[in-house]
Image (cartoon, rainbow, N blue to C red; front, top):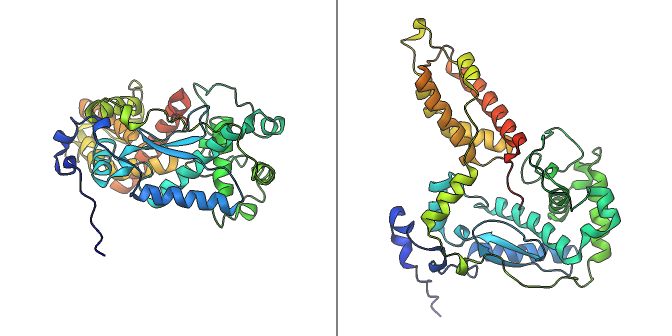
Length: 343
C-alpha cells in the first residue's frame, strides 16, 4: 500500500514577508501528524511509567503555557510545521522547544502545572509547607541565586526560584524524567526534600481521578485573528530590552576613545562580529531569551558608535570581559522584574 505524503499548505512556499500577512487562525495547523504529537505520546508514556492516571490535554496556541484552572498544555503553533519554525527563528533568533530534548523538558514542566491544577495540589498544607504559597503574586522582581541548592535545575538557571508554582513544576519535571538520577544528583542538596515530597505525593494520587477535568482550551489558534506580523511585533516588544542606557561606564572600561587607539578596530564592529556567540552563551547561562540579549547588544553597539569607542586590548580578553558585562546586565534586567513570563 502506497503511503501518501501529506499535502503542504500553500503558505509553506511563501516568502517571509508574504507569510507574515497571514492570520494565525488561517494557517490551519494541528498537532496530529507532527513530531509534537509523538512527544506528547512520549510524555503520556512517562506518566504511565510512574503509575499516574492523569493525562493533560494539549492544543496549539501562540506560546507555551498551562492556564489557571485548566489541566492542559498550550503549545506554540510554530512547532506544528518546519516553515513556521524557520520564521520563528528569523523573528526571535531561537525556537523555544524546537529540539526534541528541549520540547520534552518544557512538556514535563507544563505537565507539572497541569497535574497541580487537576488535583488542586497547591491547596494542600504540606504543598504550601514545602513550596510556599501558590496564591502569592508573581513578583515584580526577584534576585536569582545561581548557586542555591534549595532548588532543582531544569529548564534554565534559577527559574524555579521565581514563584512556588514554578518551583513545583520544575521539581516535578526533574522527578518524572525517565532514568532520572535525582536521588544521587541532589543527595546533598536541600532540594532533595522537595523531590522526595513529589515522589510521595505522586504515589498517593497516581490512581486517583482528577478533581478538575475540563478540556477547555485557552487561546487556541483557530481564535487568534491577528496576523503573524502583528504577533511578532507584540512578541518582540514583550521580550525586548526597554531599560535606559546606564552602561556607558562599563563600555568605557572595556573600550577606549583615546587617540592612541584610533587605528584599532571599532568596538561596534567587534560586538557585531561576535554578536551571535555572545547572545547564545549568555542566554544559556542566564536562561533569558536570545532576543532580549540581542536587543541589549543592539543598544551597546549603537552606544559604542556614538561614543566612538575602539578596541584597546586583545580580542580574547575583550570577548571574555564583554560576556561578563552582558551577563551582569542580563541578571540586573531579570532582577528589575523582567524575568520570563510564567509558563
